Image (cartoon, rainbow, N blue to C red; front, side, top):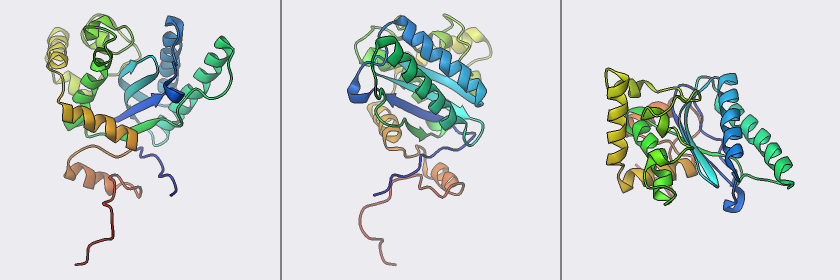
Length: 228
């Protein structure tokens, strides 16, 4: 069966996952993390993509980003992916692929899932038992949103501004939201939708999306169509 084209639409947030091939490490030392973040910052500006959140794990990374043009997201990911592989292979004297195929992504309903997706990213190092608290991890956007540092890669989504009337109030609300976590169902939905490329949202949201693209936004039911 032919592979479906990736579902990408401008103006909508996308949850993106890029994995290392065979779960191999894609970051060896701190300089590697810094290099990838630099590439993301450079090409997000170049291709007009707003990066709302991220987490860089040892063998994969997640992004939450909104492209402002139809091709902005794939162009950004292609540029970042190629340049990072070249850097990594040269530095560690290796050859061949680094990524597990093309990146995975899901277009999500911001009202339902954007803040949950941010929490999902921030809790990734905690779930992996790499740190005890999100604030202990250096390679995510959590430190930006809790007020510990300013991360120039980040463009806050409008929903962040609704968390409070002052920076302190927004930071405190965000910290509380991460402490509360997300449900196992939300975690599964965010993971599976990104890995399989299906949009995530309620029926009204999905119907509205389907009217804007010829690519199916949701997996078809198995079997033959039912007769009227």
